Length: 402
Ligand SMILES: Cc1ncc(COP(=O)(O)O)c(C=O)c1O
Image (cartoon, rainbow, N blue to C red; front, side, top):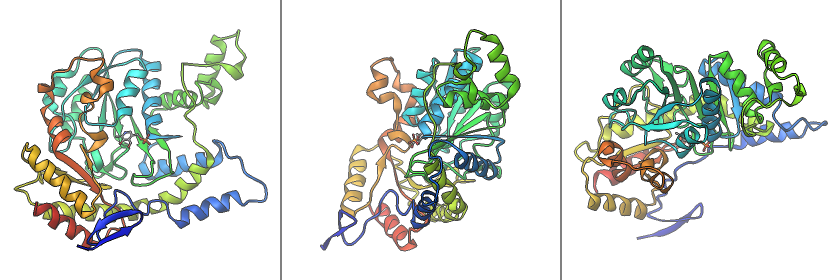
């Protein structure tokens, strides 16, 4: 068997499938060089380019108010801090299949996290458990659209409406995913996006909070910059706070304990270049994913995932059987063949099994059987726009022959 070196990886049979490839390209780098090569060096901290990118993003997503931050995790935390400022303490319902920042943001901002298992069709909430989890203290449902799969249903939206509960969408892994033709992230009360390197589009690091609610947006503006009231652009709201605090210098009124979540202009310049390619890149991703799922062996893997509206940067592989022997076999084969993978889908599987959680909470894992299946018996593999069909065929053959 021939062993070769590709892009600092040693693989067999000249095959290497990375988790991500070609995300930031020459065009993006040139946009950055042009920006920096101006005669007069432009402002480099949060400024007009950030605003331009926020506006472009709003046009793309269809949301009125959009606020760029320095990561998806910051978007999560800022959202939860703003909710806590507006609505006070209470409970947030959250899935155990998500990124750690969704959970830490709930905890750091003073809310109590309440967990609800997922379903294996769209990896969103088990709707019956969700109904049970709602109490008079529920302030919001914090949903994660897992790896480009739409997590919304009419029943879930109806439940939020009936119970008057805010829906927050984490779309960090699902830029371009739709529900009934509408982009997710524009449907709930607010949404969070990440522009980390590995996602559908990148600003190297970066994130966005999106909403149609002006007051929430204004609070987020202040909390993005240390909680400073002077960041608020609604004069009535700003004036009210200044009047309530006559002993303070209006330049330094801190609304709520917060951090510095601002982006730099450089990240926004890359975002403006990247967003031009987002839709065309996503067409390739959607087609690759559909092609892959249609050919994956349904006797071995879950292929009855709800694909309507999917837009994925990763192929999802879920074993049907609860077999650790088969799991080990899949992992050793993928490694041997030069295919990068991550076990557990979003965030590595069941967050309730992580030390930061086990240390502080007692958990009955019997209530979380579906997320435990994903934790132990699922993987994601890179799906990027320049991926050749031949490579997808090779991947399918490898998986189907295990
Ligand atoms: C669902 C989800 N939420 C939040 C984040 C955090 O985003 P970031 O890495 O930009 O901080 C991620 C990261 O991948 C994610 O997958």
